[in-house]
Every structure is written in structure tokens, then in C-alpha cells.
Image (tube, rainbow, N blue to C red; front, side, top):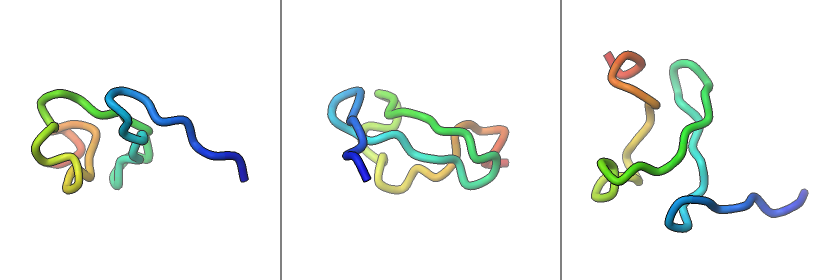
Length: 45
């Protein structure tokens, strides 16, 4: 399997647990990226 390209400050994209959408690191998640599981508030709610 080929290595996954890292993007945006070296973080790999994540997959939302609710909708399955791939999403990338955002500055607002900088302190908590390890715990981010959802792509948006709508999916989290």
C-alpha cells in the first residue's frame, strides 16, 4: 500500500465517524486534533 500524503501542516486527513467524509486539519482544531472525530458541528450534534 502506498504511503498516504500528508497535507496541511503535516497532518493526515481524517474520516468523519458520522458521515464518512474525509476532512483535513484546520487551525481551529490545532490544540485538539488528536480528539477530533467529526467534520462539523452538524455531524457532532
